[in-house]
Length: 110
Length: 284
Image 1: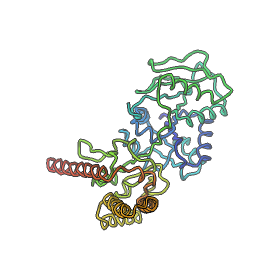
Image 2 (image 1 turned 180 degrees about the vertical axis):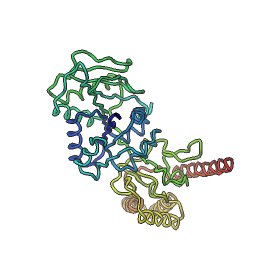
Image 3 (image 1 turned 45 degrees about the horizontal axis):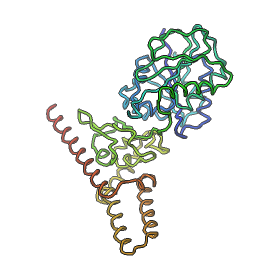
Image 4 (image 1 turned 90 degrees about the vertical axis):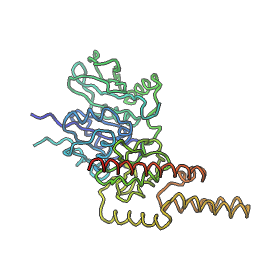
């Protein structure tokens, strides 16, 4: 059986562009789940630092990300020197409902 | 040491073997508190290697009876005593303070990121930026090199990109915020570039000339108050056209300094284009 996809949640802590209620709801429901996951205060900062943890996440297998627009998330990983595999699932908390974000993050693979 | 190369403190919320599980409510509140204070947090519920990533210190927290095994010396342990979830963030702050590291959040991460699926390496951004944010890779490609040189809230370089390839993730509106680009966006950006060309192709020249004209007029009139008012109007109009915040325009260096920096940036762009041409010739 394939390992569960790793989950990465961005809290976008230094700007008010992701609705606070969306972040709160996603964080609460992720926290209550049995999943193992990583969270970062700000994915942009992580990219600017070229944080080595990004490469660790990529090398760990399938990844699901809750952050913002997929185009920008892919560019941030590319800028950090660890381009995302094409099949990476990226959920946009700026536009999607928290219910949909959590459902997609935690869904069982078929 | 640059703020971007300084070590950081990460937190691992450990609920694996040898520890008691946290309540959902307490775990959620601890996570929220740590993230708000700028600490990355991982949640671990199984056994596994506990290892600090490079350039970081890992603070392992949990209700454990004895410490889990650590793989290296950059791992610290802190038992969570509860019931105050903010105490976890206080512990992390204490570790960061003891190590003399910068407090997270002192820099708002505002900088351009490039959509390489759209970028044509035209070097307009390199030529435009006065703050040395952009650089050129060894293969002649544009790259964002000095993120923390970028002026917070200023998206001006994205306005000069003819391919709508420059994004600012924290910008409010699309497509600069990373929204998908549509044909209207491309047409709009092309129009802006055309307008820029009509104005002489160099927005800094325009700003400089307007500033010089205003200075000349006001030096004759010797009306400082009016001069200030007119300058603010002038800067405000330029700011609206390019999306540049007034604070950024107000903090621009002197006209001579702008001219010198613009010439350096344009020379770097020319060199990059020449490098691309040479590499292209060698490859073919």
